[in-house]
View (cartoon, rainbow, N blue to C red):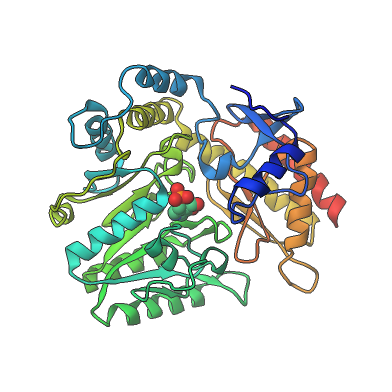
Length: 426
Ligand SMILES: Cc1ncc(COP(=O)(O)O)c(C=O)c1O
């Protein structure tokens, strides 16, 4: 299908300004109109090809329009598209069974919905039902969604749009030390003390964390910190919610980011890569905690046959292609390359990440966050056929989150272009 207007940047921008709510923002001063995708590549309306190192914000882990996944999706689309959970269908139970086999610990009961925000909102409800308490503790630099509680638990001012956040959600300092510009042991200690103080009120139902704070600037939380947080949650009867919306399904080099710390959360939330672009999300928990959620709940589109079959195909592909192992090996290469560039470019204040989830923090000579250069680097790379991401508290972190199907050559190409961008913008 083609629209009745030209596929030019100007035509799309004009209609976007007229018909979309202005909160829908986009990357780039001169954005291309992307019209098709094939694995790690995207194509624009002027027939230029891009190597994608952002995966549509960490979604297309198996590659854009992966033919093996698309084939199964199309077959299901032509067989049975929708019924809702009030009828019995097989894909939803098959997917739940499959997830139970790969999730950490005894997280064997799932509820399906359509987005990461919805999964987190459901996890908060479950925690409240199970504990009989209202409170939610979250970390600075964390992001958990656009719904009321998800946004209230988000610790990034840019994404806390609601002027009336829910008072039951409390954002406490996380392990990233704002003064030092990195994670420090002191900041971890401070964070754990603040969490314990919040827990000791006796009103907290859950504490939500991302194993690697994605939007917060690719900040991996240290294993020891996550282990201590797990102990605190256990001691105070607070449920630990592991938000794997961005880190799940192989990106960090393990199926789930929390596995690096050998921590088993009480609830895990998933979205993004689970559908590789088809909307599917879930939260999962133990049978004991799930038993607290017996009153009827339904998501009209959650668990629909098409998204569940797609997710099953995604999981099959991730396993058969050993994508977590691939992410670990290629990610080590990418991080080594970025660290080498940091030796040559003083504007690089920090290189961090795990697996194929890496961030490069740019600062000016006086140590201020360099958001303007971050934008210039992204624009320069885009004009040379490389799409990178950006995030962080000050939008000064260049994000590398490619499809996990990239090759060593793609990494070499990315590093070369990124080096060129740093030289051109210094
Ligand atoms: C860690 C994390 N949690 C939750 C969300 C919200 O997910 P969604 O946009 O699918 O609602 C995001 C989105 O970027 C995220 O990165």
